[in-house]
Amino acid sequence: IAFGARAGVPQIIVPVNFDNFYFSKRIYLSHLGPRGCPIKNLTEKYLRNAITECLANNTIIEKAKNVGSILCNKNGVENINSILKYKE
Image (tube, rainbow, N blue to C red; front, side, top):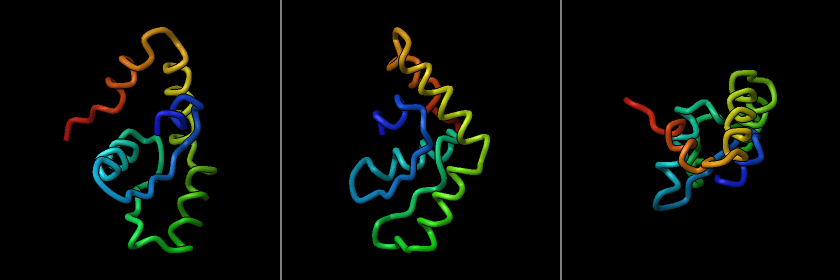
């Protein structure tokens, strides 16, 4: 997740265990990628739709680029915390 965020690209998360589910939700709610899909439910259709969304959704694309530029700056790790925190 950190490498994708630093690269400034949208992310597709396939949670497998532990904190994967948390970060999958954070990525989705922060508009850095599509909704995650647990590996046990993973299908070709999900992957096709997720990839299409990452390539076509301008909100996700721009948000990912913005996060990438923030992480490349000084104090990037501290700054990303304010982006990924989401008040539900």
